Image (cartoon, rainbow, N blue to C red; front, top):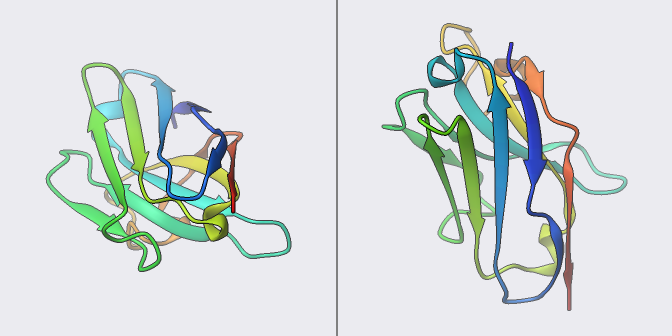
Length: 126
């Protein structure tokens, strides 16, 4: 497992942008698929984006395609989520997650990930 700490959340107006960061500890970060999930009050956890251990493959939830971009820097043990054209419905706690590529579940599924951060709040005002 890796230890994960998110940062970069905050309050932004609709149409604005935020960049979330996730710092990972552990020498094996570059071996892990990484993902972002979110959970709004009263709603189930939702897949947002994921990136393979190599960075060659990325995945996005339908609600964020074309607006959000996931990236990683293995030299810095970090993964990022650039969020543009934010909407009030993007308001949620955003969680960073790490998972072993060899697990049978898909990188779009929470079951693929066994390391989770504590989350960072993103609030988009209308």
